[in-house]
Length: 170
Length: 442
Image 1 (spheres, rainbow over the protein chains, first blue to last red):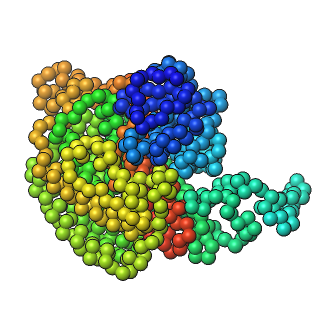
Image 2: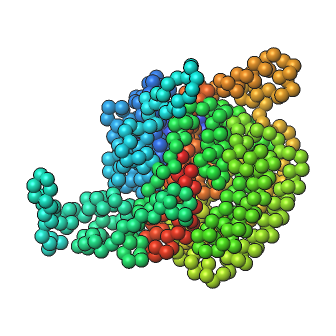
Image 3: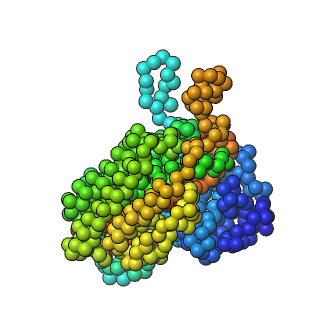
């Protein structure tokens, strides 16, 4: 097992083959690859991390050289799941690298029913698909919307203004 | 299971045969039907589904998005069997304005004007969580007065938000008196906010690095007036609602949810506490100075609408208790961090020093740079866990800002609460979840 930092949270179980680290805010970070993601979360759920407190994604377009622990290959998207243990009063952040050409990840819906809406939101905003999700449709954007707005290559809309140097609508 | 003839459909491509429901494996069927309306947890086992039941025995109706009691633009698709609600699916997004995308275009200093517009009933909590996340990335330590001012405002906000909930909930179950009362008392708190921040809502008062200004002179007296008034009037509400048979009939045993279901659905705040699980971030993972004040975490037993009502009513009492302690312990000192990187120089310095003027100009035009990194910070908003996931790439604008909105997540537990209840109770149950659509859709 590759361990980036010796900091071991007693509440968080060891998952073989998953890189561990600690973040600026002292939270345990896990970097499983896509195949081990579901398994790693399932083990944490068994170990008492019974609440999925947040699930979101980040588009690191143009930040391929960002800092990651050794053994983790940077991809364009990163899926972030925050698990919470009520008994241990601690959180674990699971960060999964998701490649641009095949943005598919296992759904956590079978472990946490509360993953349904956040996963739909990630699909809506980033186009990351979740296998095993019961209803992967757009949730915030209109159903016929094209593109995924929170991707970095999706431009921000502008209202045209009337002065010469104003940039045109993107 | 296969007693019926297959269904024939005439299409423009010729006649097509549709297999009966029984031919679909139970797993697949659950998924198929569930994709139209989300099955509640308790009835989620697809094997239990009555596949023989024809589709036309139940009726699907839409409630909202313009329904006055859905607290905004919430649309619910409900499957009804007579008067009984079977399945519910919340349809959201009508108020989506892309605030998380907007946040990537604003500097950290402008960011609090953006997040404050999400949960419009407790804007100060949104500013608080964004500021805490930014400060964690910056690694600055706040002066004690800034921490306590934030706590004062955050608790007053909880009082005003819960009062607003009592008012609208009263309205939803038919007590117009409660609506008038609730709004009347909330106005006391909003008046104080106007005096402190200049605005009744969307204050942009809690900012990265502290607060925008110090509290005005005589703020103690104003807060004391609020505390005395609200304390006395909470007893009025008790008399008006808590013991009243009609109100209890409408609330007790309606919209119940179990602790396991609430946990599985990631519900937090009064919904989770109503099931008897004492989870309050102020107690469990203290932020600000909540470990230095005395208060109780209110829990319920049955997880029904009445428990959620009682929790909110008593949480106001606990907030008042915290506020008395804040009044007593408010330290003197600076209301914002004196870190040249984050804080603009004081007004007087600008007149004397060219550098101070340049520095002031730089902070307000280019913003301050935040070290690269990512944090997740959570606070207890009146609706539950309000989280902020902030990613910085070292520039003056957040690379990614995600708000974990409690209303958005809590709405998932609505189908479970509604399952098996009457359609007439739907309004009371929606109200007990306390969704703020500005936060749901962001």
